[in-house]
Length: 432
Ligand SMILES: C=CC1=C(C)c2cc3[nH]c(cc4nc(cc5[nH]c(cc1n2)c(C)c5CCC(=O)O)C(CCC(=O)O)=C4C)c(C)c3C=C
Ligand SMILES: [Fe+2]
Image (cartoon, rainbow, N blue to C red; front, top):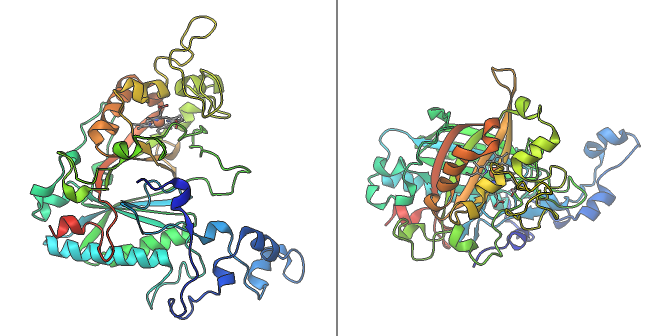
């Protein structure tokens, strides 16, 4: 049964006495405050320190806002966290390569170490000697998700267990890929609603890699902060569009079949991938200076939806089903033949679908003088040949949006299911 977005998030329970090392022991009031309590106790305006210095001057700790207190279990159901978890405000995507001479055994030791570390980070139980970057923070929806790249299998003698579904993605005509920022033996996706919590997790996991694996590439992204809008709503990307509306929903009857490998595995996904999923990761630069030259009306035609509220050009509100057959008063298709949502729709791709869960990125100004910004496109599916590949093939040929994008890096990872009690992530592969 699929975890529901709303129910996967939980508020952490009160830590048992002695569970946290000295200096990390929060009173219930400190750790589990509500937004209301934060409002009452959090900001001291005026007074000796003035509003600016108030947070550091008060001697009574304020309760955490609900954002800080929200936790996502590391082991919950059949799937790793970070797939159906609501998008967090901060994300780090990191690929590692094994150093020379590593074996299945040393990789198993690394995954055991990483799993234990991730569980400690998520539970707020830090090791003695921790750098304290996240010292005062609650869980902030921290998730850590681990995956395996195709190159891992021959390096560890596991070729026979490599999923066929993990075969390299085909080339696409619009690709401008940087090999140094593509692929990788291992992948870690970190998400949190607090940048310090996210950085801390990244730093601790990178140190835990020890001499077994080195960072191949790292990408840092962001989304809207929870609570930033008066009503919760679908996030916007850096082109300003509402992005994520027509994602498969966990309540859809075919959601699990589309996104996760079934319990018994499949012909293209061995049993050790049961409950797992495949992540396609693409760094897609947006050519924002060109995009910004278009009128809003043109921009809306390129996508097929209104910019203001994400409603389809065939009519209705954001969540109204798209009518690809609708014609305007002149008899022309309301949604153009090369509109992104027409070309990408399951109806145009033999039912192919994926769960898109991206982060935006902004790495300053590129050598061309334009923003080096865009989407860290992450999509999840039970098999990339039935998800990403057919859709990207179609987009590659006929998407009006592709003129404003550049695919700069690409990777595919097999993300195993959640470890059982006492297991580590990937144990069913590494000890089979
Ligand atoms: C191969 C898959 C896709 C890539 C790559 C991709 C890149 C990309 N998309 C946007 C902006 C939007 N995409 C939207 C919808 C949408 N996109 C894809 C697939 C890819 N997008 C799909 C399957 C869909 C849903 C189509 C449907 O069934 O209606 C939208 C509309 C809102 C929404 O439904 O999310 C926007 C906006 C950008 C900016 C981008 C690369 C940077
Ligand atoms: Fe899209």
